[in-house]
Amino acid sequence: MKVRVFSGVQPTGQLHIGNYLGALKNWAEIQAEYESIFCIVDLHAITLFQDPEELLANIRQTAALFIACGIDAQLSSIIVQSSVPAHTELAWLLNCVTPVGWLNRMTQFKSKAEQQETVGAGLLNYPVLMAADILLYQASIVPVGEDQSQHLELTRDIAQRFNSLYGEHFVMPATKLPTVGARIMGLDDPGQKMSKSAAGTNHAIGLLDEPKVVQKKIARATTDSLPAVDPENMGPGVANLIAIAEACDPSLNKEVFAGLRYGDLKKRVAEAVIARLEPIQQKFRAVTADRCYVDTVLSESRGRVMPIAEDTVRKTKVAMGLYV
Ligand code: TRP
Image (cartoon, protein in one colour):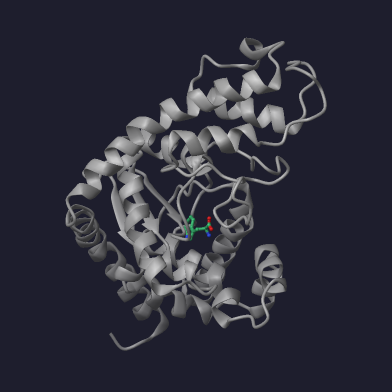
């Protein structure tokens, strides 16, 4: 039996090159070796208010972009979290064994809560839902960024606590995949990982950005006060631009750019990004030309994972003495 991989992406805005170069590209490369489930976690997205129309459009766009980036729906399952009710059901069961103190300690909760006037209970329970996502499928590999490791640790703690209360039930989710993907930082702020939710229009390059937009964003990217690329002494902004270029085209390492003035470096980086995005955008247009195609893929995947998810929920309820 193939090892199961599970990962999730929130449908909150367009996927960007950081998502692609850091995660999706790698998922597409490994999907034949594993049984992969890639989940569009819309229930996580609504822990902060989302405009309903935009959310629904983003769910479909994210699914289409997964496919455009090379996720093959025959090899992997692409599912929408809310369309598989077992996620919500298992989350409730796990909520009942999770101490509130554990959740209060989560750094992501603390930083998100700080920015809200009223903090929804869902935001606090966010990591329990994430634990449910993973444990539902006994996923043993969960490729996520560094920012999610605390949530992964918590998943293990919740599983352990459940097992100690109700008997060996959950398989402990193992570790992340060794990081092979590039860690891409924001163009406007190379100290921060490129993120969908960052405010600046110059922060991220969307996978559907047109060539002109890509050029403009890269032209405005933060560099440093040196005149040209010095491979031995690069500021974080320049290092990030070169990391982007190299992730797009492995022949473009820092030596290739040595001595290049930043204006010229930016042109070369933009060319590499545009060339990399071109086939993705083409595939995206093909995939979305047929209005029903994405929905068909989502529904087929759902049919495939549903029996696994339902079986876990049923067994979990039985273990807890619930009436099934
Ligand atoms: N919290 C993750 C993020 O924001 C998304 C996520 C939800 C996830 N459920 C998951 C990732 C399960 C991996 C596995 O990046």
